[in-house]
Length: 97
Image (cartoon, rainbow, N blue to C red; front, side):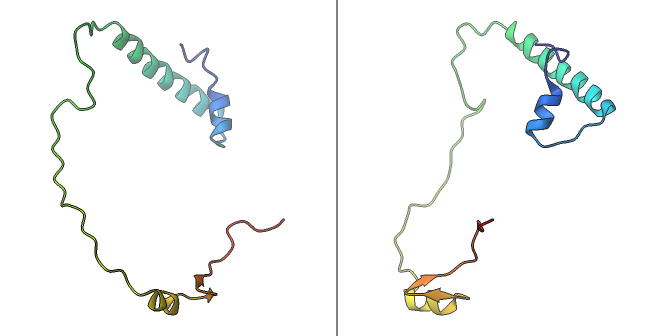
């Protein structure tokens, strides 16, 4: 897909970004280059190449999970800025409009 066919203005609208005509032209050219690289990658023969998530083996070193005692609920509630009936109160995230 070429950038001339790619709706860069639509993408900018979805991202809530206002683009100047110069920016729109610049990003269209850059996107065209990126899509061109993907087109070139499609030409690479990958027959017989197993799918991988990493090019090198990864060994994650982690400690085993350990159960430990948690802080007493009374201490947590006491240290909260506001609480009610054993629950921590927080400011509303969504307000009625």
